[in-house]
Amino acid sequence: MASVTSLFSENGELAKTISGFVPRQAQTDMANAVKSAIEDQQSLVVEAGTGTGKTFAYLGPVLLSEGKAIISTGTKNLQEQLYHRDLPLVKKALASRRKTALLKGRANYLCLHRVAQHGGNSTLVEKDVLDQLSTVRQWATTTKTGDMGELKQLPEDAKVLPLVTSTVDNCLGRDCPDYEECYLVKARRKALDADVIVVNHHLFFADMALKDTGFGELIPEADAIIFDEAHQIPDIASDYFGESMSTRQIHDLAKDITLIYRTVLKDVEQLDKTADKCRMLASDLRLLFPDTPQRGNWAEALDRDEVRAEVGKLAEALGVLHEVCKLHIGRDKDLDNLYERIVQAREKLAALSDNKQDGVSLWYETTPRHLIMHLTPLSIAAKFRRFVSSPPRGWVFTSATLMVNGGFEHFQRRMGLEDARTLGLDSPFNYQEQAVLCVPRHLPEPNSFAMRETLLETAKRLIKASNGRCFLLFTSHAMLREIAGRLEDEVDNPLLVQGTTTKQALLDEYLTKKNAVLLGTGAFWEGVDVRGNDLVCVMIDKLPFASPDDPLLQARIEDVKKRGGNPFAAIQIPQAVITLKQGAGRLIRDPNDKGVLVICDNRLVTRHYAKTFLASLPDMHRTRSLDEVDSFLSNINDEQ
View (cartoon, rainbow, N blue to C red):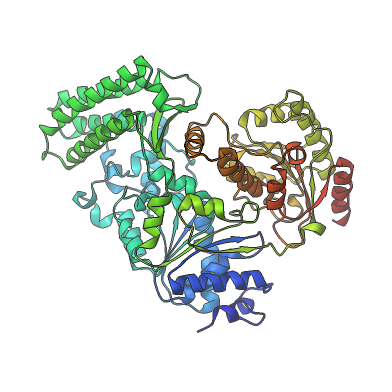
């Protein structure tokens, strides 16, 4: 069998299988480090700069090792790309016989029992949902996997999805009449039987926190666990180690009780009425907060008399529902399951009503119709450290953006990985030749009113110089909307604005319209891969410090202060550095790319922390002159 070094060599298996494969020392170094971590059952943290080829660098050792491996990626899109494109290539190169499986969260699989439940119940469903339901039924007769992703004609947020997929709450498990035919069960069995399983971070941590049984059998068996896009893990893991509850869950509970009352247990009207009271109280609770979506401090909200009273009424109503439901246990499997859900809802609401807890942040967010209450631990390091240390196995955490100012301390401290091996690998790209970083002269202060005009004028100038083909990235939706609205009247280029359609549809349109400009916020700062002259300029409006009124951030800042630390240096700067590196990483994607990164924030010149940001960015040629930017972009245009 091939060794790791020979696999990545000039005449190795990858070079023979993949046309244009070029050996890269950084890739071989990373592959050998991954191999050692798996063999020694150690933890490894690797930053691999753009162009290192980190995916192959961990897939090679994983396929060459003997044991079972779980690979977790940041998003479903990356999961599909890894499973359908990268993994088959390396498998083919190695002529590997190892079994692979793709496993998504349960909301991605058709639930046969839920479809059957909505069989004749057109009265409970709106007309547009009925149309979607018939589309799903038609597809259900042909699908082999039950993966809802196959149904391309449904929008991503189709209203029918909750009706035809299961949640942890409403799944009947082994009591389900369709258990043997269940697509989720089949996908899990296939995963249990596989040597390499591709999952995503949300699924991994949902199970690690024992919120969902079934996949929980996989983690204990794995000899190696690889996290790609590992910079996302601290926040995702924190969510799963906490508790959350939304008024939507109460609405869904009431809806499911109504469904049972109308179809199976027509004699339990009291159950339906009690559930409806819970639903109305949940809606009343939402009405105590402004219409516009917001985030806030839930502990403070509970100090408001009307909020505390409404939560008390809801807790009382759930108690009555619990008593009524108890009388009918054993009559129907779905109702027995609902009884468990009511018990859980009461427990969660009790935990979320105690605003005197230490070491956690209580916060809320609202959507136009619902309120979601959260309890999030301020640190997961101790919990995760225990999880990683036993049983012994290989752990690999990799991303292009983990280091801050040349070190991994920020990531290691957040994850409890102080004892892990670390490896920092530079990008093989020649950034001095390929890219220019510009912080324009004479910028107003970032939050001043004058900044809007400056941003508008800079954006117009860059759009003209690059013939479109640029990303304008913003740190807030408000600034994104403002600049997008004003640019419409001032430039002829097609403007593609985040929020008008799905992320993928915007990217597809950007690639087909050769002079288009894409304006985005959070979603476009990472996981977007546009190569060559399709993207020659990225403008960032300001340093991406998290919003100071974010309640979770406020709680973490208070916690660091209590322990005598400096929260700005310990939390805010490192997080902003990693986000900025992600945004900057959109620009140069392969050895022949050229482009300009313009950051419109004078703090990169005036503040003492500027050197931390600059030291963490790729080593681009730096300038403060937009004239120099114009001539660099003009040269790119001439070369085409």
